[in-house]
Amino acid sequence: MKFKKVALVGLLTVAVAGGVGWLSLDKETRGFLAEFPTNRDVLFWKESQRDAAFRALDRLPVLAKHRVISAGNAPSALPPGPPLNLGLDVDAYMQGQRSAALLVLHKGQVRLERYGLGFDAGGRWTSFSVAKSFTSTLVGAAVRDGHIKSMDDKVSDYIQEMKGSAYDDVSIRQLLTMTSGIRWNEDYSDPQSDVAQFNNHQPEEGMDAAVSYLRKLPRAAPAGTRWLYSTGETNLVGILVSRATGKPLSTYLSEKIWVPAGMEQQATWILSKTGQEISGCCIQAATRDFARFGQFILGGARANGQSIVADDWLPQATTARTGINMPGRGYGYQWWNQYARARLRIPVVDLRRRQLCRARHFRTGHLHRPPAPARDRLQRQLGRRRPRSCGQR
Image 1: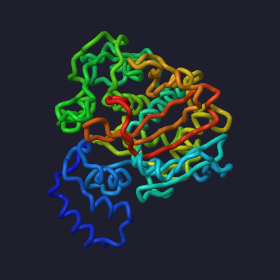
Image 2: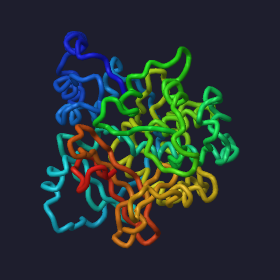
Image 3: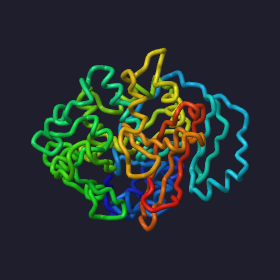
């Protein structure tokens, strides 16, 4: 995601304060302006800038444009349940994790709900990589709706500009499992990595920014033979869904998930410089609505008795389709899988921002769906922690 230069800060602040009035702005926007980023690249913002920005990225259109994800008129209930006793100081835990929110559902009941960093239930937080699982679910919906004929269709069948590129050999299934074999570097600490250069890429005239960058990448391994984490390819998945359905992703997400799942608040999806939803990240939503998505998936992605995804989609999407070179862990269709830990009743939804080793970067966690014995418990967390080992995702 690319933002305007810091020279805009003074002019922007004066314009907003003079035209609207500083005190009339909501607290998230005021906090964002007070900690306005001095670096154009979100990967290299400092901690206080991330804390302020990740709750307000959709507040200032001059920085990042977005589309609205409309909610319906019948939010699904999240009734309170017996308070959950974790045997620890939850507030201290959240402070140590730099968590903005922690919500635990058990059998559809709210057993724990806490907020930190000045955040609250009415606010929206940026999802970052957890958006990948929303995008994956939209692929399942597009298959059910007949917009995508087969998971073994080639990417270039749907994105014509990819014809003649290395993606001619890549199927939709391989794109979803990140086994395309295309070269990609997702080192957030390296300004020369693809994930950093991608943000600064000047797209070819009339072409989507992601397509323009990815179509030039060379092949590093035969398709289907190697797993490599690539947010760029999830952005390509979103473009494929939009092309197949003929609708913006925000509209399709509203129709297929946001309204059927009974989300309470509207959400937003940040757009790329060429006007496409950044499908590898950047959904701004309320904590309870992220939790409702987890509950929706637990229930089989069903609305009014009908699944919104293709038959057998969720078992295929949420189980390991490929190894990731880490014992006990695998990757499905944009869903992490931790099959070796299923007996520990791991949370179903886990969102957090992480700071890895020396890299000054954020990471808003992942979604995973454990086997049946663990599926009555769901956790929603927003924040940041330092993992135990460098490179852990």
